[in-house]
Length: 192
Image (cartoon, rainbow, N blue to C red; front, side):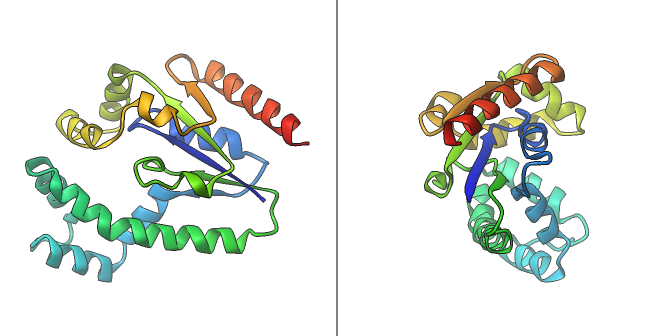
């Protein structure tokens, strides 16, 4: 089994890259999808409302965004709750698909969480900040919240030291797809 990690900064194109790389090749684990599942659980919402003293459980995400924007240390507290739960799901995923040749993992904070040793190959998806803010806002994100989250992530140069391939995603989707698949084909040939 070969485990392929896909990471990158906020709004760099990780999800697009993950879909392109895993298509018809193997199962894909998406950390953000697991986080969304957590937010649907009543027990998780109760835990967060107690930890962060939030009364309104229906809009817990927007309350958390305000709390994090005011004090970024709250993001670390939130991550300490979420990350172990997501890692547990990741272990279940690996166990479930243990007979597959290739497994793909889209993990935004792969480097920041020091998960490098868990992967045989890591792709870093990179885009300049201006492009990433534009994408984030286009999906309904707040520029101020982007800045808050972006500060918490390592810069590309630091992340690049731990990655096998760096793919720039600032041009058209077609070009990005060609780059990704070309790199992946070369990688597959090297392990055949």
